[in-house]
Length: 425
Ligand code: GLC
Image (tube, rainbow, N blue to C red; front, side, top):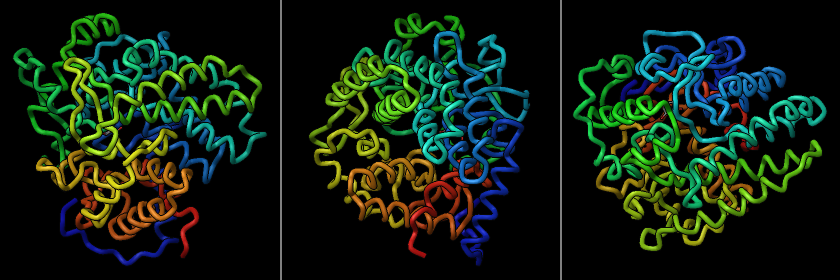
């Protein structure tokens, strides 16, 4: 898409119809792809959001989405970021590059665990129908959360071993930390993303070289978490991942109560993470931040991940003023990076664009914590962007132009499940 997005004259009914159609068109039988061409497989957190969207039109299908996601779970508890159900040559790096030797084939890294939060949302819509699926999923979700705490929680906050794990691939939070990655052995490769989308809207070549170097490192040690921790130059406590896991643990504990399962162990994870969040507070910046575990330095980045503190249920400290500042600098909020940053780029992926999917969870958190004015601003901006240009992957925060992929599952899903809920029409 481009900056000259044609303003369509559609009404909300038409957008609702299109959103449902997108969910159906991207359905590959028990799971949704994010969008055809650019992302032809099942992505982890995309699927959790897809389930939320499905729950507006078909509860049984919503539960199936989550159950299909957990079919890719490893015996370690890790739930991979991509499940390659059916090989598609249009995506790189595909299953052979990852070399994880799993069935179904998967990548070797994870993604933000929003599944338990979405399981709770879907359960709340119909607790009777939701009981059996939650009983089936409960152990799997707990195993995944335990894996995070045990394999990635050594600092109290949650470490990512690859920028793709964060779901915010090229965020500034880890750009500096990634500079030490040796890319000399990466060699030639053919990117496929830039044949689907304008390269200005995607990560740079140097970013991709580093992504691949980390994939090769993981593959060479057989995706062994201990070896990765010892051998990788990259390990960052991601503010977004930490907040999302903390929230997911709270929702899992709530679900435990509903189905009569013990929550004691989950409560220890919550306490561990609450404590871990403290070190992510960046007083100079006035918001929570990501921490380079190799150098012990905070990144100094005001990114949208910082504003998940309400969603996580942690003390926001001065985050409200910081968020208000960011909102004052972007008419279509929340930009993924503060426009005051010299690295802000309104088109480039996680260095500026607004992502409706992240808005939905920041917005939920604000609403729940009584920040109604801010919550409604975020919701209204998301509404405007989608009304003006449609169901894009992300949007230019200055113009509302749709960018990246189109007909995007999670944008359609959050439209149905969050954007249009409670709107004063
Ligand atoms: C990109 C996004 C990531 C998402 C994936 C599929 O890699 O950064 O968050 O899960 O696309 O939509």
